[in-house]
Image (cartoon, rainbow, N blue to C red; front, top):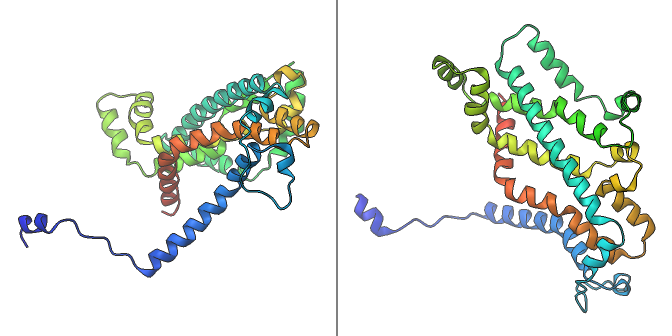
Length: 289
């Protein structure tokens, strides 16, 4: 068949098998199961408080109560704590990603004495639970006068994250060293190689680190609960916990505020999911080599 005949014949139709149909049904069922809690939260947020406890449960509200989103945020100091959490989450994300990339580049590309030992220590530290250093860190930060401030939450983020450093090291294995060597032949420094050559190529894993770091900083509850006393310095996670304890019966208002609470995480994952899947796929393939 010539090229002209192929063009005339038009594009070939994809053939679907019974296995494809089963896969589609399973994935659709999984998607519905994942979305059901979010849709139920939205339904409760739009109901009146009497409809929330109606038996049998009603899937759709009789009248949309959009005012719940305004009233729900007024019950607590929502927007101030929202701003506090946003500042902490963004700062921690920037600190963790930058420091982890620097550590990952050093362990993955630079040759220095004890590199394997340091890499083993980083990987081994992943097996230690975070509660191990809680008491020593508390004594350290209180001794520095950082109690009732955001510093105990923000400062540790700028000292690297073992998980993110490991992810970056694994991703570097998928990038040929010839790129580094070519840049260094032209007189590039290690800083130039990292920032101008490797970072643009490693953007999928960096976006993955951003998503995980932002989610962890946005949702963290224990550290703010331990170190922060003043209500004006509370994060949104603490404010929502106090909301639930004080207004446990007003579930429609609580769900309305909770939907706004999870909105930043949904948005950052929605816009970064393409790079997120690429980053995890590349890291998994590098781990299997």
